[in-house]
Image (cartoon, rainbow, N blue to C red; front, side, top):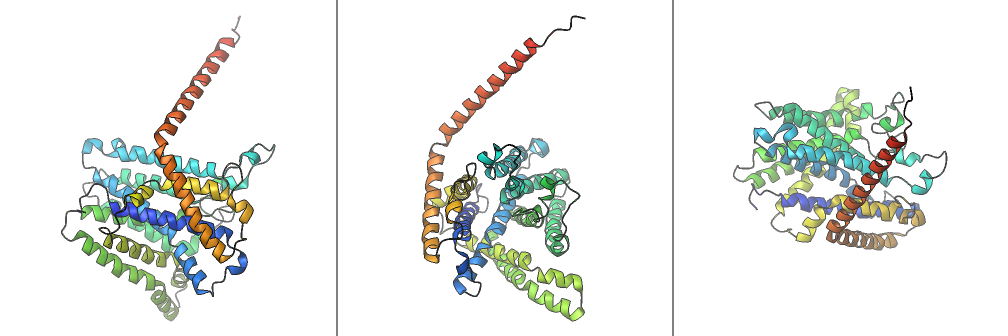
Length: 387
């Protein structure tokens, strides 16, 4: 694959592997019995550590490809708000947030008088990815008129620095002065699974990586040099908390001690860089069209898995019946079957997507027509003022 290939196949492959890791991770985490969750067990500890890589990879790869496509457009007439990726990105970001809220809704709860499901207010990964895309677009719009695009890369890198290095300080804030629906984007005290900070840090990191990758796309040995840099930096970030902690302890610097002890974010940067390096290295080996198709339809996979596992809309999912009840072997076999079934349903949906979209469009057209008729009817029925 040439560096200038319009579609970066290795990105689709990374997303495919990441979504499969997410499927098995959510299944096992949700259904494995508590008695088997032993961090002293090498198998569970290894699985638990690998599972923690999924979200950082997802955020990073989303920021990477989105920023890469944003800065790829060089025609001044098609930049800024006229940029097709900006328009699509705004719609995509808003749609992800709406879908995220809908997936957490339970129809039966919503129909109960006086009841509001707190689960709906909680923020999850889709909320944060959607909001992250909107942030990336905002950074692009603030900097695209500049003669040098370097400013955008510095903002992206600075955002990562702030989000990660100050996380031990701001993570304890509860934001009680904000409405709960907004506060949930910043704190987990009300049950949110993800918060926009520090997780936007991975999206901005991916944006920075995508920016550099595009800027150096024509240089010889692009992939070789990128892989080497990712390997070197990956090892540095994996060991960063250790030597930073040594420095902090020797100098008795409390702020550095906080950063060193909250090391999971820094270590995950190392994991992400090594993950990217691996799939860049295997870009000519792993070229499966099926994997590419999975990587290009991760949202569909996510929605389908959420409905099957957590019972979106109805409350009837595997989580309801097998929550923390399976043995290790049952969980492993079940996870394999769950991945297979989810992907099978996804491919069936993809094959019928055009037909389904046409039906949805017809339904929308009928709904809008009905609403217009009703509005027109009420306008006609409005009593005239005899004065």
